[in-house]
Amino acid sequence: MSHPVLETRELTIRFGGHAAVDGVSAAFHAGTLTAIVGPNGAGKTTYFNLMSGQLAATAGRVLLDGVDVTGLGPAARARRGMGRAFQLTNLFPNLSVLENVRLAVQARAGGGGDLLSLWSRRRDWIEIAERVLESVNLANARHTPAAALSHGDKRKLDVAIMMALEPHVLMFDEPTAGMSVDEVPVILDLIHALKAEGTRTILLVEHKMDVVRSLADRIVVLHNGRLVADGEPAEVIASPIVQEAYLGMPARTTVQDLASPALERAHG
Amino acid sequence: METILSGDYPRSRLLTALLGLLLAVLAAAPFLFDGAQAINTAAKICVFVVLVASYDLLLGYTGIVSFAHTMFYGLGGYGVGLALYSWGPSWGAVAGGLALALAAGVLLALGIGLFSLRVRAIFFAMITLAVASAFAVLAAQLSDVTGGEDGRSFRVPELLRPGFRLVAEPVLGTTINGRVVTYYIVFASALLLFLAALRVVNSPFGRVLQAIRENEFRAEALGYRTVCYRTAANCLAAGMAVLAGALNALWLRYTGPETTLSFTIMLDILLMVVIGGMGTLYGAAIGASLLILAQSYLQKLMAVAAQATEGLPLLPQLLHPDRWLLWLGVLFVTSVYFFPSGIVGRLRAASR
Ligand SMILES: Nc1ncnc2c1ncn2[C@@H]1O[C@H](COP(=O)(O)OP(=O)(O)O)[C@@H](O)[C@H]1O
Ligand SMILES: [Mg+2]
Image (cartoon, rainbow over all chains, first blue to last red; front, side, top):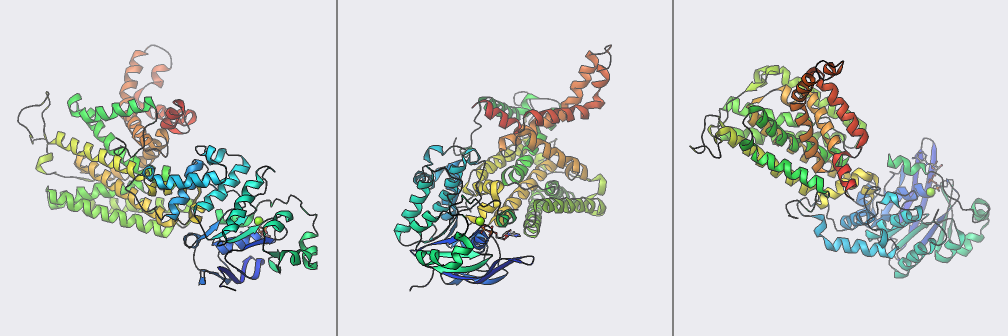
């Protein structure tokens, strides 16, 4: 197999004595979609935060395109093509929907250092942002402040911001949680299309097993911060440890992670 | 027009009219007014528009709370003032003092930024307060150099002196002396600096500052090195405050702690930003003008009102000029209460 695009080696973080992510080693390859599952509090979001740099690892390493990025912050990892959508909506609340996405386009273009020209004269950035908004059905809301959107639209915008960075690694953290039934397909179709491009490395935290079955090439199961299973979807779902650890829970509970302390801390 | 205003229009008829009036009055001030107080007030407004705009760059646009802004303002005042005082009234001294003050201000802002912008906002605010207080104490203690509490009066270059005549004959009834020249230097510099600030906040860079204010965590996740942006904003604002301080010193021909470093000025700046409307530079212009006018003329107005109400119970006492601070406080509280987004925010909302 080719070199992994993203790899973690014995990745660990402890909060006090508690290891939220505990020695997780896994490798993710271009053109694949890996679902990361596990009960609430298993460490999925924390694992994402460690990979995208929002949290610094206590031990272990993160490699992106074969380069050790463990010591880099989130901005540097984003510039290397790591895109992150957040479980808790994480927008620029008082800026317009368009501006939320345009800022990502501008970041991707490396245009933030320019003090002398006018942002409004960069039509190209605005056009790219509008196209991204169209892909998530948000073009009509472009002038609305992000804070005024419905919950589902906020989740879509969150994904749109990541998309605008054109990352080659995409991490979706429960992108459809809390969305109304008719909104879910927009996001799933989008993820489908990204996967169909065949070049991106996609990681998806998702509780709905039917979604996981239809999208994932592979499932990684986390439980109490540990990687307890990793393999083909059918095989993983059938394994006893998974039946016990995760699927033993009433299937398809609309498990909404309550607050994610990892994010909140990182946020403050 | 789009280029001059950087595409950032007032977006309210009334606001456009107010700003137009302000610009016209300031531009023609030496020809409109005779008295020293009026022209002093006009010059002070010019200086404060720059000072408050630079503070809004930090507070309103980037979301950084700093109490060190008067320190940079003071650096500008002392830089030019002490250079003129000790090197004599030449343009070389003005340029040298200004260059030194700018360098010192930007370095200091860089230092404060790099050391403390990583910490939580509240600690940053405390650190700026500590540094600014230390600076004020230092300026008072080093009285051999700074003149201590008394400050320093100094002579300015020939061109700026009251005795100088640019043209022999009065123009439109006004003698074009060095004071008028000084006023126009202050006015033109202020206008240019304001427009430059308007450009910065509407540049791609300025947009990142607003993103940081809104959600620093996400800005970082987009790949923006937020510490660098915040530090750059800090340095820019500091540099602008230094320039405002220099203009003020040139106008007053004096520099001292009362006019530059005092905490009262820091409070005034805060009030002006909040009353005008945070996060809009037009708000800085409106807030600065309004508060300075109130400070300069409220007492006079009250004296008139007190006389007019003489004989009535209580009112004359309430309107006595010594109570002006009370009324200023009332003005502040009501304006914050009724216009939480500032005057500019209110006007824009009304015109939507
Ligand atoms: N910043 C933090 N400080 C302390 N504990 C944390 C922090 N972040 C996460 N945790 C803990 O780590 C565990 C994993 O959380 P999380 O990664 O959000 O789980 P998941 O996303 O799988 O539901 C939880 O027990 C949570 O309480
Ligand atoms: Mg989670």
